[in-house]
Image (cartoon, helix red, strand yellow):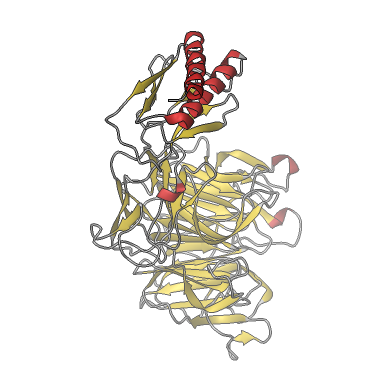
Length: 592
């Protein structure tokens, strides 16, 4: 070795010894048994006071480098000869750390400088093990720390089991093709994939995250992670004008369309079903401006557009227990039937729709956040809510209604102004008995009788009374709908009605402005240029349908195979499509 080189080494050794004396927590350990790919780069991390993480890199540092438990000694394992460049680099690193600490720089010190040797773990997998999701649901994996995105991959071209994140329904003989590579959030700790096509409702799927997934320090997971899930299906549907919601068999709720969230009309257009957080054990669903569910504890939770605050997740309705049915009305109110046959209502009371006896339009009694008992109702077996009126079916087959009566929708004689336009306490609907089921539209109501007949009363603005006339011919006396027999259920929208019959067929009548009846205009039974069907017409494409939901301008059906299909207006993506404005034919909501 030349004198020049020796002198340089002496200077470096002197500097190093000085550092060792002044800064005791640094020491080196020679490790000859660890081999290291010369192209591999391991990292020493330090976290600054403002939370930013920096790295000092060298192929000389191995994953075995560590900070002692006392955090006073940093051990750097060296796998081979340092050489001139390596030694200079190492001493430069030490000098930088030393200078930073000696000058009081809190961003680099022995308490927050460390070598990352910890294997990443999985914090959460969604859907969780043993749970379920919809057919078109995304799969999300959350890691304990920042990951190297290049190590998080999936198969996007075929059904081979390749990539770090795999999904299979046959023990990984084949895997589900994904629509794209995993997407990550800004922290690179949350990764999401979505199947290229919807999954099968009859199958159980397993997610596998391979241990080759690595964090940004090249630390791998210790073992593969696995999680299994099923595919849920809809059991109930409910529509509010431009928003449709489905209750799933796992108790979750998914909604799509024009999603409103406050009285300030904060809205989003949701083209495919989106889960409402906080709905994991719902048993019943009612959708209007206020969306409400009954959970597994018989509590009522609501969300929607009736408060000034954005209401995204369901909030508990206080002082309301043992609910068995909930009905939400358009004019920001809701009612619940309790297990003892009583009914309680809450929300706006501008038209006396809470049934608490307010006899006039009273500005001082406009809203009740706490439910109030509806007077005189002790034997309710069903509760329904319209725009600003409500009705209940009694055990003896009669019906009582209260609230707004401007169109005679409570079954009481009506007037165009004054106190007669509201009915603040329940009254029995005349000429109506042996009722099996009731359903309320905006300003009207319909009932299915024990003999399969259907009667409707209230507004006839869209021909929904089936009387052969429309517009101003409202009736507080129930009118028998001609052409309907064998009805088993009834569904009322804003101004259109559909009845499910014993033979499995469906007949609808009323407003068809947006093809919500599922038929083209007919010459014989419609009013030209108005698209109103004055008499019931049989709806095609409803074979196997078990339930309907009718809204403002669209209708949806739930079928025996658990599929959901919708038709009518698509102005706010109620049909889950992008390129059409309306459809007379049912369109399957594929994600469900």
